[in-house]
Length: 117
Image (cartoon, rainbow, N blue to C red; front, side, top):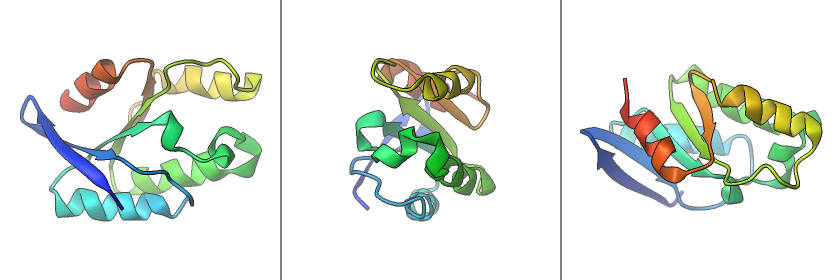
């Protein structure tokens, strides 16, 4: 899995720099986090598969649960909510207040949250 690792305020952040294909790709992210001594992941929405946005597929829940099991904090960057179903927009709204998975419209906000706590 191709990633970029950077530090912000002394916190190492792993950025997934390739497309996610399967829910089990979360385990590859966990392995990369362990390798780089990090518990923080940044993921851009364009790297997620269509199934992630279709909540009935259960992809999003399975993917996120795998990361939560290993106490990985994930910040998702979703620049716009246009084009998503009402149900997925509700999911995003709830995720804006999440503890282990939170979504942001700007990358800088996502990085700041990952570097906090």
